[in-house]
Length: 631
Image (cartoon, rainbow, N blue to C red; front, side, top):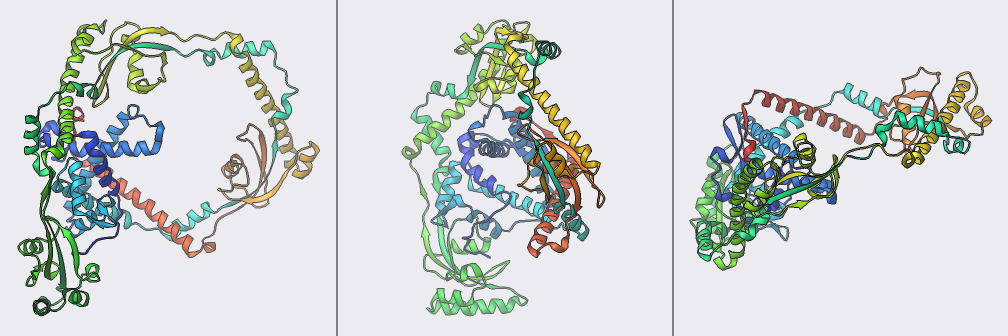
């Protein structure tokens, strides 16, 4: 209880926490402008429990960050917009269901557990130690209150308990372990010969008639890509920022309304000695009273803590708890600590964990930033909020204008002060920039745009970016001239004929080997080198991957039998392999460490399956209403 938490914690929700801190403010701006209790600011309703747009936005920003890390420079936010939205909404709905289930099961998170998690988050540490000032600054910059943040973390920990409880309670049976090892560690005895396809190409002739026949039968493969060039209008929040003009009075009013965001709470640093209740609460109280009297009499408090405190985490530090603000510690403990003066020692204070003797070491007063210090940030926030509101007003007007004048962009251009832009030629698979977005290419090739020369509907690229396109130029797909693809076809037919010759050689070798000829001799007669038989596992890297995969895809053979199989390898050559034996993996050959790893892996997989099944059942039984228009 009340330990000085300095170890870094890990868990399912740690990345969500850090992502929220780092990304929410930059992406979404002013959470506090909105009253998210209204339906207009709900992302979903799950069994009558509201899932706010703010929760969804945090999940959205986390998912976007994950995708960006996965794809690096190739990440295109516009291309993945729909996928990110759907994933984020699914996650917040799933999380709501898990928390409801955990709460119904009586799971809860203590103030100590919450404090431990928060104080272990790397973003809040300075020189390896939790910093309350840094914590509050990070949360404020994320556009959130500490109360709201701690509420979300507590809910996340509750859901974490349920998830870990289900996954952690699964186990692996001996039969499952034996079967896994049998298949995982199975070995197969193979030999093989590689037949280079290139060897046959010099003698292959491809006639003009063959080329023409292939071309006529496969004209769809030799067509140019259908392409269009588009005229388009773009409406973006970022383009509206320059039109927002603010005066100091407006900014000062906002500062006063949001002043608590720019204020650091008072913090107090204390030491404590914890005497746990044990089986005899009266005895614990008497012991605490005795220690209190020694401390009041002038005995060294740090020494008393090291010798007597049952709080293992802080005892070694002389009971030092570091700085803490209101809302972190046990209610009785906190009430006492905040009623003391620096240097005071309290009488024993009862909590659910035992009795505490508290010594208040230091008081760090509340501090705040002046208007001039945060003016630039406030101006940016308010501008972004007003630009977003203006954007939503203009999007509606945008839609009406392009609908009312469906054969021209001029009306929308003039009314909204936009510029008509022209795209490069793009195909159905898209093009550069915004034209890599599937929504845009789909809109460009619908009949209304492509055949009727009408404006598209407003295309929502993201929550802050919309687009309307119309056709400028259309280049239909057409069959390329034979002369343009003759070289390509010649190479293709040459490769096919050479591969067929290699397959024929392999078939001949297979027949000889199955008739009893030694594989080495049969290959040597045709001037090929046979790779001697060897036992391989599924992950063997000394044999071409395609050959290993083919060997393990073959039916199991009886002892003493032989089977052959031809396979094309990655470099285009052809191989013939023989399978002459199968040995199953044996649990008895495993080390204790390897067996534990397999056991844990099976148990984890079983747990994940159990969790997935439970979550599906919760969804099937739940009443879920989504509000996609709010996302």
